[in-house]
Image 1: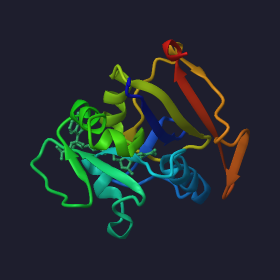
Image 2: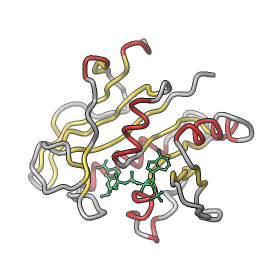
Image 3: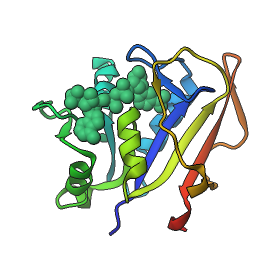
Image 4: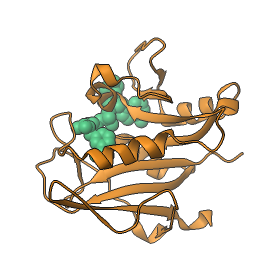
Length: 186
Ligand SMILES: NC(=O)c1ccc[n+]([C@@H]2O[C@H](COP(=O)([O-])OP(=O)(O)OC[C@H]3O[C@@H](n4cnc5c(N)ncnc54)[C@H](OP(=O)(O)O)[C@@H]3O)[C@@H](O)[C@H]2O)c1
């Protein structure tokens, strides 16, 4: 089967996604959305994989690591051993190849790419890129990490029944969930 990478990110007005190794905002409902989208599976016997860069892994508080009910995959160029907490891969290609081969291929439903910057960039360039779940945080935050440029001409907005419609609001911050799909995937 052709693997499909699905990116999920939240970015503010200047496309910022992070600051000082953390998220620039605290939005409980957006975090719950991330957890639900990356966790839910159609097949109860399967799990999803969450593929992340080593710095994103480091940014998760130790008591929340690994992200539960998901196979955590960490990309690093170092020789890291994260034991049973996470599977370590040296590239996105290696991760896709591993996850789409037995035994993982029988256990994993969706391949979520959860950041940060260079991992999103690699996924956007990958032949397996399929969708980008991008939350548009309609506010300005100081950021030092950014979502990469995305060629919007190659994508179209699609509906996903699992994604709430319209403008959301929390703590006076407005945001909306958007799903972009690569046009050739239709
Ligand atoms: N708003 C959002 O949706 C969102 C999502 C995720 C993260 N974030 C934020 O973003 C920041 C972290 O992201 P980041 O961009 O700084 O770092 P990152 O992408 O999470 O991690 C970068 C590290 O990943 C490894 N790496 C990168 N590209 C690789 C590749 N092609 N193959 C193998 N390994 C690779 C390298 O690890 P080594 O140095 O170990 O070799 C690199 O230093 C934090 O502030 C976090 O809170 C925000």
